Image: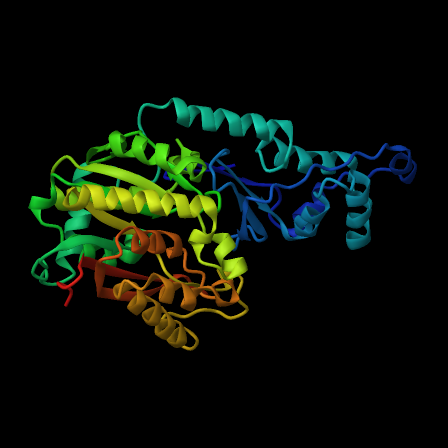
Length: 447
């Protein structure tokens, strides 16, 4: 077992190579195999992350829990990868044992099957009572917590205040001379990708913030990567970072929760794990150098709109929330400043494409053109035009910033944007994330 101190995650290698798997098999007799009573294998959770192992020394699939209900990560060796298909709630351990026999030519001992099931089950990767207990415990822990702790400190950014300030200063200084503050600025959009990859986007956006903005409430619209579709996650918990605590404007939270009804998930557990708002909080604190008050809103995916081709607000709950947020924006007016934590396209093998994505090369040149067309509609305040470019093929570019951007366009229809920075970044050698930095001003003031 290997411990990653930065992520506080355990990396459990079941077996590292096919050869070592075979040597670990305990062979049983044919008669023993026939006499055993079959046990139905539990269903593998559908919401876990499965990806190629990043370690050449430990090939196979890496399995992890994006919700962090469990801190464990398992590496499933190549010989056992096909076995995951048997965890469907219908097939049995004898079915799995027979499949291993067909593929290896040897009868695998029942204790090997049991150990495999045990590793998946005790670490919360199967739909069993153990997982339900783990999930309830973690959700209760978040509900009862007085604050939202910085779960990405030490991995996404330094967890020591001075080291963090120094790093962000370097980001800002490397972006060249700051542009003059635009009149009538009402908001900005910045990446939510890892700051080490998106530093230029973060720096370009957050250097625009002037000290006189400190007294405003910052409405932070973040992508909810694991949130429920057509739902918006709210929390009253202050956000803690290495730079201090950001208080939440609970008055506005309560008003939205009352007006938007079932569209709102109060104390949404996704806040406990999501990075799209946490990263914005860190940069807000650094840029303003003072206590910051926020209204954090996680925007779940507008899945129905992509499937049906109808505008997001055609869903009753989404429409109700967008109307309430628009009313809040009109009522509060200049007391609010809007911050969007968004990434754009996700292309390449990591995201299911058959091609290897290379930033600004090959197919990514076409992605750039499509990204800029969509951003042009965003900057024009054209929510419907933006949607019309996005929904064909259920968004072939996989813009994870779709729901926060559309939410902002509906809530502040008078906003017009300026594109400050666009970038494509290889998140791994075969996959690319694109992102941008934008500023928003009131209509009639945009450049």
